[in-house]
Image (cartoon, rainbow, N blue to C red):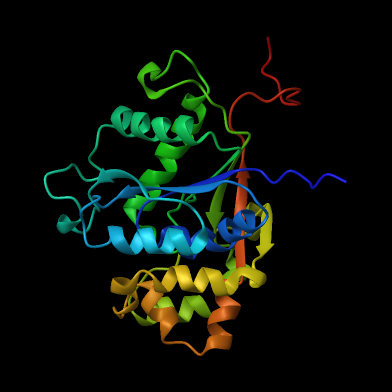
Length: 257
């Protein structure tokens, strides 16, 4: 009997550590089932201090080598000296860079940030969401970005998100260090994944971001200070919203002709 096909998965996230915090469980789950997995990171340069940590985190998740767009973090000038910040980069240029990775990796599923920029609303998260939506649509169209390789249309696009009902203890923990907490309506979530079987792998990937673990305000540092049981409860569920890339056959909502 043939094993069921497990779709390939490409994460597209703003910063090193976003991949582990937001989708480390599903990345580990897909990899354990034999699927190809990878991650594109929009900010921080290949020679920056966070690049080796990202490589170690991806190795823990089985997600291959880092794929970096090379832009600067909106709030950290040391992230990519001499390069544009992601939020300042020409939109067409950023889309083209991401289309190149999508066409090279040829994922069936793409996962990225949600429209509000996750819990803290970081501008790089919001911009990565916007770029990814446009790049997933453009990747399947041959006339667009012909220099980026042969067209490839992912079959599904998901946004990692945080419903109001699922924030729980995180709200207090983030507000305690002065961070905002942005959530979406519970109905916005289309997929909730219990990743508890892969919580250990996910935590190893988060710990690989040692610089963030050592700091007080970033989420890896907050999680590292919690008792193991409480931390596992927080990281063992991942929520997503299914978005629709490309053309949809049989659309029930039609424009009037």
